[in-house]
Image 1 (cartoon, rainbow over the protein chains, first blue to last red):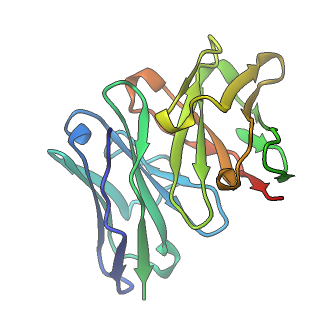
Image 2 (image 1 turned 45 degrees about the vertical axis):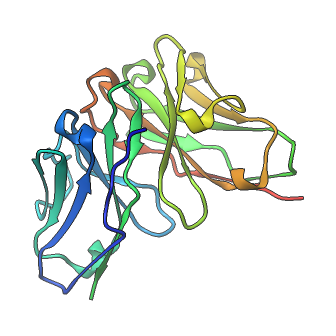
Amino acid sequence: SYELTQPSSVSVSPGQTARITCSGDVLAKKYVRWFQQKPGQAPVLLIYKDSERPSGIPDRFSGSTSGSTVTLTISGAQVEDEADYYCYSATDNNLRVFGGGTKLTVL
Amino acid sequence: QVQLVQSGSELKKPGASVKVSCKASGYTFTDYAVIWVRQAPGQGLEWMGWINTNTGIPTYAQDFTGRFVFSLDRSVSTAYLQISSLKADDTALYYCAREENYYHGSGPVDYWGQGTLVTVSS
């Protein structure tokens, strides 16, 4: 089975840089997408194709990749960025998989 | 504007069935795949599968074969998720979303429904 591994939690102070990693063998071959989910809300796409940002997403959100690990970087994290973050990727057989999610605390 | 609007919350007894709808508007329905995602209470996102809106062919994740059925009505730009023989651990929020360029595996998943809460309880 395909697995994407994320840290369960990350904590930063406001204004600091938050980095959330996502690891999995499939990521060496497949693109990743990142989502933000706040309580009671549907997920919001932050990044697709590893590092592309949809319109309307602040440029403090960026994505990078190195081998089988991808990283979502939030530069100058704000209190409003406190949320759960999920990575998402295709698999070899063209299914999809989510990472387990990372709870970001900004305080 | 693009919208995916899902049907309302459902309360069902164990063993019953439920059908969740996801109505798309603001874009050409057949230009995007529809994916289904489950989120159990307090848990993460779980990819259930997708349906090709051109062919109507569904594909299911391993944990969602048998009792789960995806379907379409292209005449009203609506996708459906039907779950039969409901169990207590089917209690979850179910989301639909559109995915661009599904076969390339890189396109945005940029619009989501608001989620449908299915509660299974006797």
